[in-house]
Length: 331
Image 1 (spheres, rainbow, N blue to C red):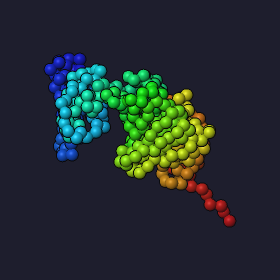
Image 2 (image 1 turned 135 degrees about the horizontal axis):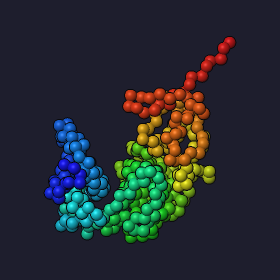
Image 3 (image 1 turned 90 degrees about the horizontal axis):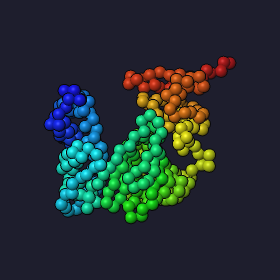
Image 4 (image 1 turned 120 degrees about the vertical axis):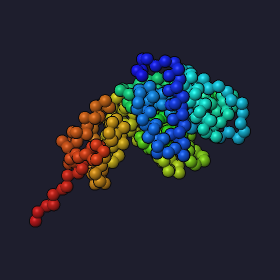
């Protein structure tokens, strides 16, 4: 079966299979045999992987739906494109999740549409369905969902600068890592690497809330909040006057005399294979400089030329930075 010769019936079968595997891979009783069967199915044809990725997008949206107290009459899910694919996925994903079953647009549970944006090879500027403008850093992925009573973004990875259109009746919520940012209209930056999230506010006001703790922390212009999985509350501080975190909007990565332990999360998000530290003493070595974000992959091989370090590789193929032991003085 070639990709160009797939009939409508075959394509529908692939869609249904992708939705089935989306449900099973998220099920608590999924077996090792099922996971092996899924891997074989996923890798057997490019369309299988493509359709499954589409299902995961819908699952991500459904995962943020609140728990209904009473079921209501369902309303059809109507994404802007690939209607049947997403409708099948939504139906199966929602049926598999009691928290979201039998709810719809009128109740404020399902989005009427959503869009997925990605900046794979360079910076990108996009306009969301509500008119808000977003700048995406290199390697960033996010999904925008429009609900009856709110606007919602899921930052899956990377970094984005938001200029949110003011609409007090429809709050703008950004889910990132183990928390969320709630605004009505403002300008702010969200950076996410693994489970670490940092929010910088330039204009307006936002509320930072944890997924696991009730209550929120307010930010005012010139403030920054950081959090990660397991934090009870975000860490809040004033943005330094010389802060260069937003240099990425000009295509630059600025490392201002940072310890390697602090610099690597900023560097690794631009690399296909994260760089590791051999030990804590290596992480204490400091690094500085201004780099083009599209050329960060050239930074690591050059480190032994400017720092007292050498490079090795671990069993997974990740580069590892090792400090050169200092020689004890004789005498």
